[in-house]
Length: 294
Ligand SMILES: *[C@@H]1O[C@H](CO)[C@@H](O)[C@H](O)[C@H]1NC(C)=O
Ligand SMILES: *[C@@H]1O[C@H](CO)[C@@H](O)[C@H](O)[C@H]1NC(C)=O
Ligand SMILES: *[C@@H]1O[C@H](CO)[C@@H](O)[C@H](O)[C@H]1NC(C)=O
Ligand SMILES: *[C@@H]1O[C@H](CO)[C@@H](O)[C@H](O)[C@H]1NC(C)=O
Ligand SMILES: *[C@@H]1O[C@H](CO)[C@@H](O)[C@H](O)[C@H]1NC(C)=O
Ligand SMILES: *[C@@H]1O[C@H](CO)[C@@H](O)[C@H](O)[C@H]1NC(C)=O
Ligand SMILES: *[C@@H]1O[C@H](CO)[C@@H](O)[C@H](O)[C@H]1NC(C)=O
Ligand SMILES: *[C@@H]1O[C@H](CO)[C@@H](O)[C@H](O)[C@H]1NC(C)=O
Ligand SMILES: *[C@@H]1O[C@H](CO)[C@@H](O)[C@H](O)[C@H]1NC(C)=O
Ligand SMILES: *[C@@H]1O[C@H](CO)[C@@H](O)[C@H](O)[C@H]1NC(C)=O
Ligand SMILES: *[C@@H]1O[C@H](CO)[C@@H](O)[C@H](O)[C@H]1NC(C)=O
Ligand SMILES: *[C@@H]1O[C@H](CO)[C@@H](O)[C@H](O)[C@H]1NC(C)=O
Image 1 (cartoon, rainbow, N blue to C red):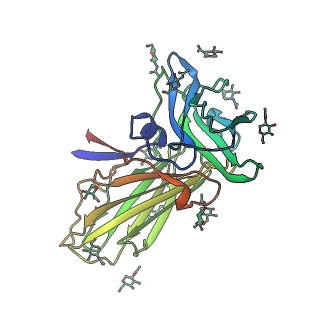
Image 2: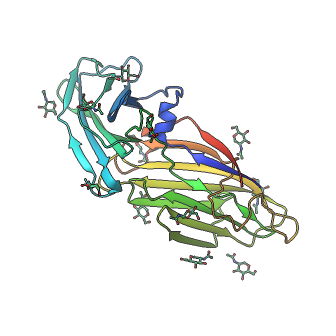
Image 3: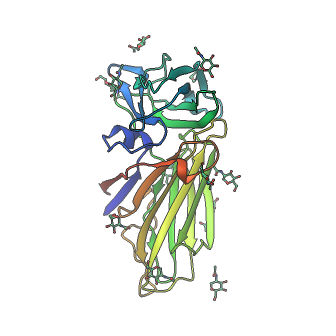
């Protein structure tokens, strides 16, 4: 049986896979590159706005290495401020002098403070990028969310989301709706050693009708300002015209079996607690479609 898996690609993967550089308003984090033949180090790059003018720019880095997947007690490496004046953007990248454990999840967090001539703060941005220390000079994947292939009957749609327990987030909110307004009738959360698993069950639907299913997540590490991540993806599924189950995946499948047609757009808020659209920057869409023969 052919089962499709879509992988909601990680920020790092998007950033490191040669996507178009987005236009930015503030300095922001670019791709994180592995260092060839040294899996303990990472190369963080920066993207500056075109013709970026400033009087003072203060930058501070903090690296969090989630050794042994300790979500709330990462090894923290703070650095002192790096200060720039007069539109000097001579910081195209940095390789922080810390030795990370190969394969670990790592947050690289940066605070950018721009001030005017009287040192009045014009902007103060906290931004983190989730990445992983490399293994054999290759960055391992980060998979924020897997979604099972929805199973539809004439009057219901059911699917599961799978969040890896390895991700360094202690706050995970996953929501789903159909056609923008219909909330799930039943939700359920379970977990095993690998995943947190959320079930979404929509009932009383109309038979033989297309429904637009949207799944959103918000993740954060409550210790780390700027660590928020969010994503929404949508897919259209049509309920069956009889009472029989319509699905290309077996309901009994134990694998995450996400739908290939979910369109994914990843956004990353670049500041603190709120997901303010004005400071979000939209990342280019990536979905990976993997076919697996069972
Ligand atoms: C990686 O580079 C750092 C700094 O140059 C060095 O201390 C460390 O030993 C290197 N690690 C390996 C595995 O080469
Ligand atoms: C870091 O990445 C930048 C951009 O790809 C590259 O120009 C620079 O040489 C890299 N630095 C190191 C030490 O690998
Ligand atoms: C990670 O686990 C290893 C092996 O269990 C242990 O030796 C090490 O001290 C742990 N490191 C941290 C920072 O907890
Ligand atoms: C850089 O700026 C920070 C924050 O304003 C300040 O505390 C620090 O002393 C400055 N460092 C240098 C070397 O100027
Ligand atoms: C890294 O490379 C070595 C030698 O090529 C290989 O033996 C090892 O299995 C690789 N490790 C991983 C995790 O790919
Ligand atoms: C579904 O329909 C049944 C029968 O009309 C009703 O009792 C039930 O409350 C409905 N459930 C939802 C979630 O709308
Ligand atoms: C909800 O989860 C429990 C296990 O925690 C499971 O026994 C139950 O069947 C689930 N309910 C549904 C509707 O899937
Ligand atoms: C849900 O939206 C689809 C189009 O996206 C529409 O055809 C369908 O009638 C809608 N269903 C309901 C119950 O509103
Ligand atoms: C997740 O939801 C809980 C309860 O609704 C809320 O307290 C928390 O702030 C939310 N977390 C995020 C990252 O939005
Ligand atoms: C996904 O996006 C493409 C192009 O934006 C669009 O043609 C397609 O209909 C979308 N698919 C779904 C399921 O929304
Ligand atoms: C957790 O559940 C998923 C999906 O059902 C399954 O693929 C995975 O093997 C399970 N992991 C463990 C450790 O039981
Ligand atoms: C987002 O930020 C802009 C300017 O910084 C502000 O005008 C707007 O009210 C904010 N919106 C929200 C929803 O916080």
